[in-house]
Amino acid sequence: MLDGLRRLGQATLRWLNRLGHATLFLLGLLRALGALSRRPGLIVRQLYALGVLSLPIIAMSGLFVGMVLGLQGYANLVDFGATSTLGTVVALSLVRELGPVLAALLYAARAGSALTAEIGLMKATEQLACMQMMAVDPFARVFAPRFVAGFLAMPLLAGIFTAIGILGGYFVAVQQLGVDSGAFWSQMQAVVGLVDDVLYGVVIKSVAFGWVANWIAVFEGYDAMPTSEGISLATTRTVVNTALVVLALDFVLTALFFGV
Amino acid sequence: MGNLKKLELAVGAFVALGLAAFFMLAMKVSDITDLGKNQGYQVTARFENIGALKVRAPVTLGGVRIGRVAAIQLDPRSYEAVVTLAIEPQYDRLPTDSSASILTAGLLGEQYVGLEPGGMDETLKNGSSLKLTQSALVLEKLIGRMLTNAVSATPPPAKTP
Image (cartoon, rainbow over all chains, first blue to last red; front, top):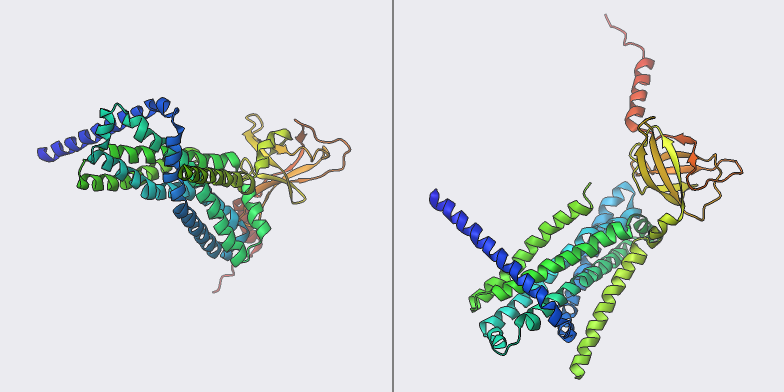
């Protein structure tokens, strides 16, 4: 009994300890922004690795998710003779939830894990220690560029995911199932609001997700045990923790913006 | 150097694609004209019962959307619902004796405000109010009335010996 209680306390303290470490690490990242602003080339290189190389999976997934939404929405709406609202269904589900959330999950799997593995390996092979020996701040040279680039890439990827998803829904609904093209777009425009849905949905959510996803990915790499096992553990933790935090944060943001 | 150029080109294309996606979301998916919704003029209408009318519900005339419901309040004195209608500026020739009714799109659809133009020469301006209104049809009341009518219309069942 007492032993179990003690173990619970131990786990809590360890968790709080890591949270404190992560917060200090985030402050270090923010402090390095000044130095980073003199080397914007570093960000461009990471934007390529994190953003451009994530494009294929984001675009393909967005297309398929949109097409599935089109098919499922049609199958359910056709019973009520309400297929003209299919555009609204596809657009609202993508803009409010699926676009930012799925893009963040895919980003964590595709780019976040790579970030963690890369930084963890740098640590294991003592590249970070070497940098510090040469008075190069790894925060300004390694961590901050990756964090900033990922933070910038996330909203763009979410926007691309959403837009391609809507086009996929359009393709299935209008080209394949014969929903009227005019009704598809006009019903969508009548319901989807620029501020209420696009800003509060895709934009704010993806900015928040980009922040936590990249924070977790870079921190897990920095915090990884410098062994091959430690790096594998850290990479797993990145994907699992990002997924959990993104989904929980999504609930909070949805309750905040779309809750009654 | 050529490698870096290619990389920068790819990043540039990526950023442009992302911005294009947001441009499409703004222009094609949401209605950007919503931003200018404050440019029109506002009129109020009082209803006994607004049913399930919501803010941002459409205001139509002859089936064409000419504005949106901007606000819904309760007048604490008369217990009437005061609905503020924001009407787009190009529809500035509505007679003052136009009537407003709360209608339902389809049997289970959302509720909206339908206007019927009147015949007066004077036109509605910002701040004017609609005098002729018709409240929402509340389905439960309707069914209740139908049931009481049905009960009073049927003769009492004849007792069989």
